[in-house]
Image (cartoon, rainbow, N blue to C red):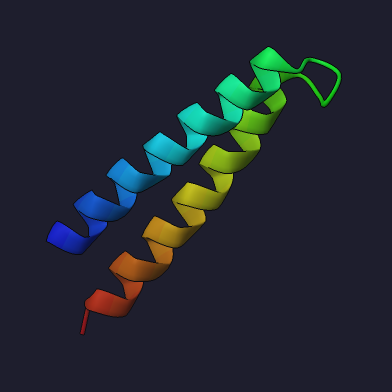
Length: 55
C-alpha cells in the first residue's frame, strides 16, 4: 500500500510539472489536456500495481 501511495504522490508531482510546463509555453498544447492525459496514465499505473498486489 505504501508503494501505491508513493506512486500517486510522484504521479501528482509529474502532473503538476506537465501542467506548469504547458502553462508556461501554451504553444505546446492545452494545459488541461496534458494534465488529464497524465492522470489517465497515472490511474493505469496504480491499477496495475494494485492488481499485481492482490493474490
